[in-house]
Image 1 (spheres, one colour):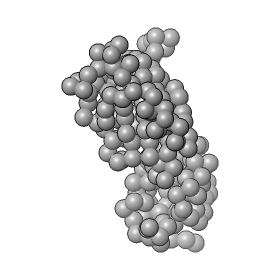
Image 2 (cartoon, chains in turn green, blue):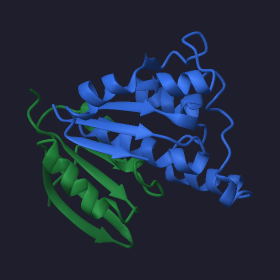
Image 3 (cartoon, one colour):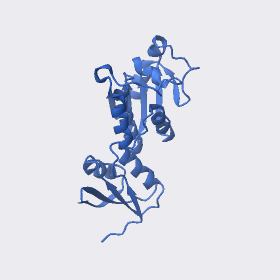
Image 4 (cartoon, helix red, strand yellow):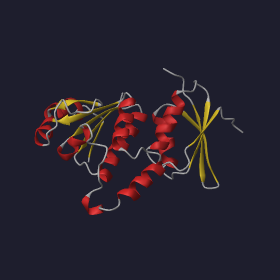
Length: 79
Length: 138
């Protein structure tokens, strides 16, 4: 079980806000930390993996629980 | 650094949300985003021009419903608030086309401070659109 350092709940929000909020949250966290994102927007199932790959971060896990999508994102080393 | 160029033509509330959403996403994806507001959209970058936009005529009467849904999605319902948020990312630059400025009475004096400048379309084409990795038009 991967422990998250911080949790961001963007339930109810729709594109583009989940990605925008994830970006804001990650920018305030240290490299190597893990952010847990909880979302309900169906678009995040493809948006978040694509965005994480594009930005050089790491998607440790994604799952669905009770209609919510859970993502665990590990922050990349800051350049 | 990847670059995104966007050309926005219309100022109807429901039609300007999509390009601004893409600008948000570009900025969040560490892209440099340049937006040229042409035609009616030029007025959006004037003082007071973005605050009370109406939905397009074909969807007349749906203003309240759309704004309620936009709020639910987490976006500011006021387009000027979106413009300010885009500028605050430090990744988004917004320009008004000089031809549109002339037609729709947009001057440097009545531009909102978030707008960079009134520019020629040739400059935008050669320096922004041609050099961009992605170009979107709306």
